[in-house]
Length: 249
Image 1 (cartoon, helix red, strand yellow):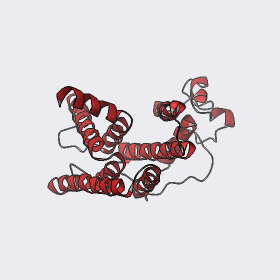
Image 2 (cartoon, rainbow, N blue to C red; image 1 turned 90 degrees about the vertical axis):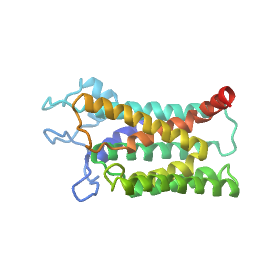
Image 3 (spheres, rainbow, N blue to C red; image 1 turned 135 degrees about the vertical axis):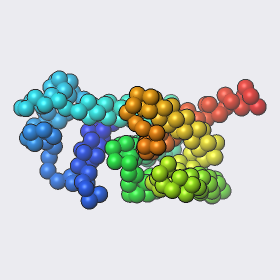
Image 4 (cartoon, rainbow, N blue to C red; image 1 turned 45 degrees about the horizontal axis):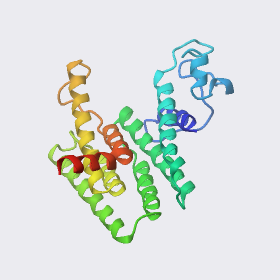
């Protein structure tokens, strides 16, 4: 299922037009010869391997990113579902569905910002709505208020960076995404997520500059780092926080 969703996301991102709209009309086709793909050429992961990464007709290379997105989405879906094997939860199925939907929209944010340096509003708003449903299952009113406050503080911090850099160092889409992360993760995990995001962003930025793929002051999409930091903190943040509290405090 995750690999199939990854295949759909490849189409979603690839058909993003100049007017800011996604054209999903028509079936999948080869980007080079524009020939419509047959069903056996469109099986996630398997078709790429069977075709050896090339179009069956024109033999043009199929972008490796397509295979990578399908593979990563499959693995992430598997990780999300694995934690439910040992849990006895009243809303087990609904919670899993919400988690998978949140992962899917985070992947949309990651891919759109990576390719176009745009974070779609509809993706962030969908994430906030899904987070409301997720917290409704196991949070009290007081906890929800604390989560909203955390989201506002996180968004305020990024809005300050947006103003200071005049939108060149931080986009306004990052501000809205920061609100979701704060609202969804809570105070401690949000701090950890932002730490990982800034750390990995700095490391990758230095590597890109040293490899001469980017120049200093050239904008780099920060959304993918926020998404990655958010996922890491969501799944393993509590373990890291407990480790730090047990060894240093």
